[in-house]
Amino acid sequence: MRQELLALKEKRRPYRLKTIRYWYHVHGSDSDEGEPIIRWEYESPRALPEARHCLNHVHLDHDIPCGTATLDLRRCHLATGWVTIESVLRFVIYELDVAPASPGWHEELAASECRFRREFTVD
Image (tube, rainbow, N blue to C red; front, side, top):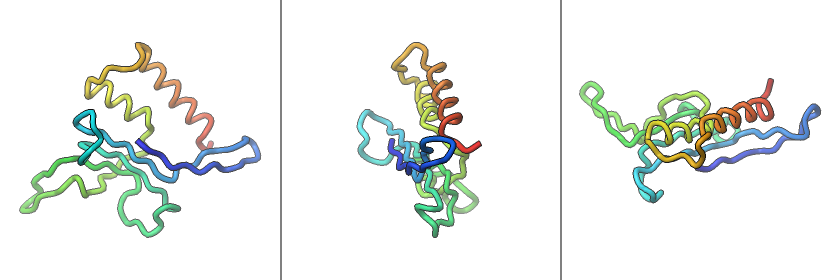
């Protein structure tokens, strides 16, 4: 998991973080070697002005039949909304049955998302 951020000075706040890129990868083993099974990615227009694909997107390690062709979901940029790191952690804990680091994980993730939206997003 990686993020590239830009710190912006603001009049009403000391700063605001702007996301330039994020890469959230889930691998099928403890190693992060090889192709991830799921990749959520975002590239801002500032980072990739020539991009024609969906800037918020997901890739899956899977091929699916599509008419007479096969769609390689590793290469397709399937549109998503904004994906927070908390959403990825919730997915890994709930859907993949990974043990959470804390018994109050759900409340902690909800509080973190609330704090992110309150402190770092534009009203």
